[in-house]
Length: 218
Image (tube, rainbow, N blue to C red; front, side):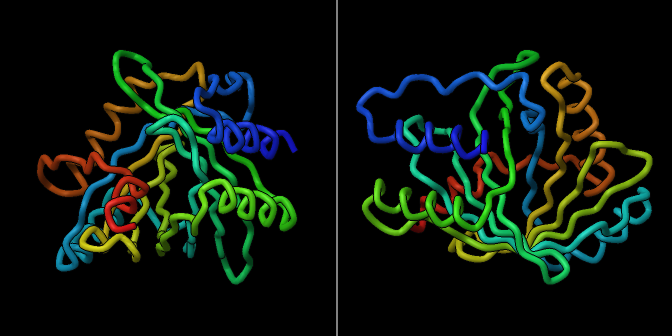
């Protein structure tokens, strides 16, 4: 219920001329720093990337079909997302809130999320469309999560994305979820090291989020 109330606060504040900052949630167990970097993949390099993942000790942990819908927010860069996930034939819904914060000399996203009941999902989507005045932005992707016993808290996701126009296609995301009092700098360094090994080269991450890409085609 707490995650629903936080989501409602952000959603309803989108109607105000000047939105107040959202309540601090640093003590919420569902709140972390999402230290992640996303990289574009060419279809012809997928097999090589998968083989390198295996060589690095990563194995497929789950296959997830996702549909993301974005609720309107007041502050540019913040995100309020309703995600339907289907894993092994079972579907559940997650509400995620993200906002940019300055931590350890750089900018990362603070992330809070929790599961939604079918009733809460329907209510938030209805209210979001009502406030936006038209259909919500949405896109879908197939995500293959890879984990390794040697890299605790790291997830390497291979995404096949649809609905983003010219930005549709294949991506790799390397993500480390860091607790509020965790070591963000070490997480950044670990991502750089893993990316170098995964691509066998220095590769610049994609700066746009999927939501930013979606806005370009909607």
